[in-house]
Length: 92
Image 1: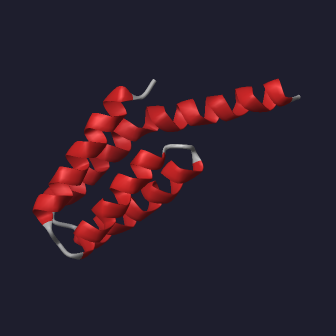
Image 2: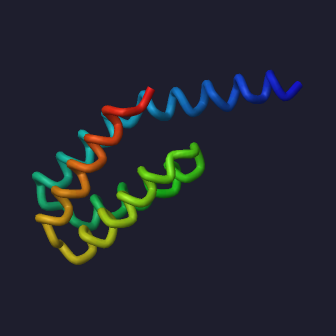
C-alpha cells in the first residue's frame, strides 16, 4: 500500500517538476511586460504549490519574488527569476 502511494506521489512530484520551466517562462513574460500584480499573484501560487509538492527552495524564492513584485523592485524580481531558473536545472 505504501509503495503504491509513494509511486503516485513521486509521479505527481515529477509532473510538477516538468511543468516548472513553462511556469518560469510565464513569470519572465510578466516581468518583461511590467505586470507587477500578475507577477505577484503567479509567484504566490507557485510558492504554495512548491511547498505542497516538496520543493521548499522553490517556495522560498517565490516568497522573495512575490515581495519584490509587490514593491516593483524589478532588479530583485529578475534576480529571483534567475534563481528559479538555476534551481529547475538541478531537478530530476
